[in-house]
Length: 377
Ligand code: SF4
Image (cartoon, rainbow, N blue to C red; front, side, top):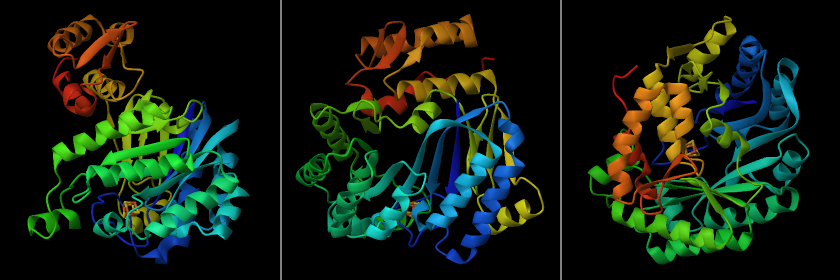
């Protein structure tokens, strides 16, 4: 089983914290759709032995596409790839695009899962982040989407400067009141070269407070666990039966094809990434060239990637897999490095799997980094 990720590199306006690849100039949208379809055709051989289980429209803002464009792209997937009978087809959507008409159109398309970029239900947070929607749209679009879609995820951001614990709790409670079955939630991070970084450097916005973010994370885990959500990946919470099939496949190391500018691909041997420039991407594809760079992953790279993704999930790192896939040297290194963390209560072993404890959860990326290898092969 494998997945196809399709990157839609357009947004109505730039969120202040964002470092994804997108353009606010929609002038090339039609040409981009044709290029995405052509890339799907050009790369079909890479997946000739694969069965596609998930299709994921990410961005950027995929909801800027009209449904005819979405249908054309999905048609190109079906026309060139073998697809399971009931694939998960997710569209990331922003509240300001989700009018009643648009939701109805999407409900009549093959899209069967919506991932809505709510981020916050509060005007102050939305303004600080320069989101294109307002608090009223955030609430209205969920209520309308729920009429037609059962499988809905919403994104929420915590650790926003000025966001008190009370406001964060209100955000979580609003999400719970809607009864959505999946929530993805991330700490606000300050990336280099973003407007947010500039504002913080100039003193116009207070810096992000890591302790506040950690406190928000613990509140999130506690409230969502109490409401029956499983924290199946550090930033993802799903009711049973509603875990993202796309993301789960990715965390479990399955193959994926990344289509569109800046999209990444992975085939268990190498990783590839498309050029992150819309004009150059369209031009290359028009000339039947794949504007992609690749790197072959060493055994050490694959080990590090597995430890990083494994520790972020409830499936942890299989010690048996480390032994059989990577060998005794890697196994010995991992168990030795993990020992101190186990003694500190940050990691534990259960059913031959290395897992992050409740205490270590917020720190899981740092813990994983301490278990990385630099040069064994
Ligand atoms: S909508 Fe998403 S991709 Fe676009 S600027 Fe905002 S965060 Fe970035």
